[in-house]
Image 1 (cartoon, rainbow, N blue to C red):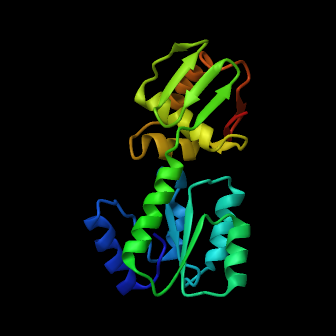
Image 2 (tube, rainbow, N blue to C red):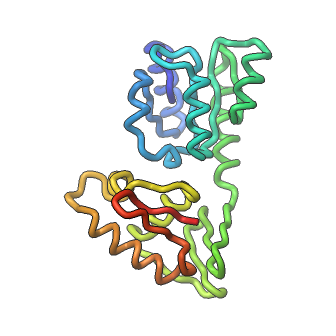
Length: 210
């Protein structure tokens, strides 16, 4: 939830948590720069009138980076032109202030269900189900370690783009004291399963899943 109003943000955070939703509330929109993986979230709630940046610019940036997490715009802007701009930029829903918190909850649940519909991806003879976290090759299931799956999932979410090794380390291993070598080890493991050249190496930069 990206919302700079401290009173509204605090009350929404409490209401959503009381209804079983885990909330990461960002009050200072500059903190967005430090989030490496927006795909870890089910829904992004985005205010348009923020302190340092326009919500429209944030939405544009998210979609340009191929981040497909559902975005719900929550704003006092009620003009149809503002709604048109946001939907054209890739917003999934739009709710104007003032609003009923129950309606926000219903909309969040609807967007969450939409995201968790089974997503199946095929890479050559390998089929990957992102919802059940299963991988099959020629009809036979292949078991991956949790770490290998996290790495594969991250590459899938960023497919077609070069993912820097530092970003991979931050997302998969967090604060653990590991280096580039461990990434190469797990990339090698994935290459044994995926078709040849599915993962390309960009020396000194990172990796790209075609």
